[in-house]
Image (tube, rainbow, N blue to C red):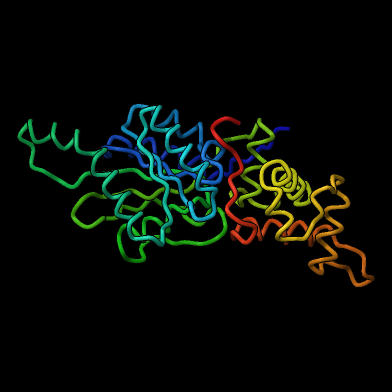
Length: 282
């Protein structure tokens, strides 16, 4: 399966990032803590390959904390400092600021040695759509500057933002790569709401999530929907959830589209529990 998805504004944004790279000292890439590898854009990796980088794993409050620790260690072994955060926790925001300052320090030291007047460090914030870039920017600046929303594609323009007196960040639009050639990547991103729901059949995405829960979080599936863990047939699981949660048509039959929508909303809002869609091992 190959999913093509590369709107014109994303191509333009990628070109804009290339042009701005010479102005920045480091790159801050935001990924989703629930799928840190799948939400990493290989297209951006090529674009920023020569810059000092750091990772911010967003939405840690929705992810499995034990697997998040594994991801932090995974990136650290690659020489990429990383922090997992909840944007509503002040300590996490301070951690991002400290990590960013550390990434820029070498460049600042070199400028000082050359006798160049000290200036705020400059960072570039990159990531795929709906990963939370604008929300983090607003928290770092401690005021509402960047537009936010719960749908992909809110940020369309580049924006410089001052973070206290420590550094400046350039916010950029979320960019996806031209096509998803790995089916798992597409389904993981669809499950957590990174790509628009219209790109994949919601019932298929919900079935993918159910299979993941059966294999990794069977207790959560049982606790939330009272689904018998011995039920293996997907039709039976959809039917059980639909009847228990009232996802019915006027005639009383289970509406599978409603079941899929209900399950994905529960996953994305954390009502299903703290769930990560991939680990460093798989």
